[in-house]
Length: 221
Image (cartoon, rainbow, N blue to C red; front, side, top):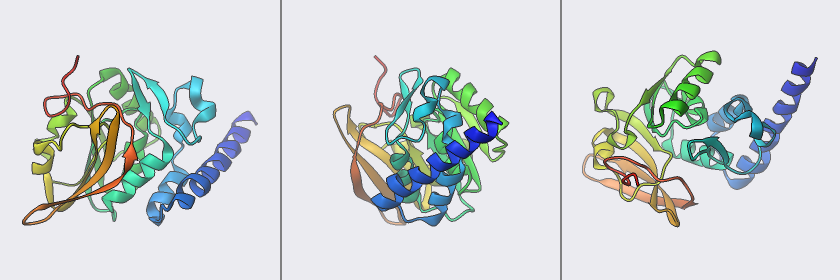
């Protein structure tokens, strides 16, 4: 009985999240909205913060990392322009929630996390929920995953000082990279589209992410 009540409560929370945080702010991709309305975000949030899982804010998940604000997840996902058959790379698995959303929109998702504890937790949750088109890898995400390249979409959930060259090299022609750029105090979310002759980039919005630590990111203190 309690399980049923909880399910109904979270379903209502997801509906309100989609309507009041996403649709009202201009998220128009119906596939993104459907995924966000179906994936149980609360299961990716630590028990202590589960009551706030659908609120309009990021939440701590341990190791100094966060699960991104729902709107940020949606806008970054929409910027990839996924149709269903793509292979996607995510840099910064974190809770696993973004990977779960991507898995509903793409053919296969590779996701890299430098914190082994977070990676193992995300992998366990994703497996329990039956997401079988996601591979979680522990490593330096700033280097990408060259052995599985090229990717149609690459999404980076941490702020980089510059666009990592190795990630650009792993993007297929016509593919899209979505990445927060800047420093800890001033960041802009950028969309980069790779054409045959150049990289076309555009600013999306101001944002605030943890730093991308790695060989092609910020150096660890």
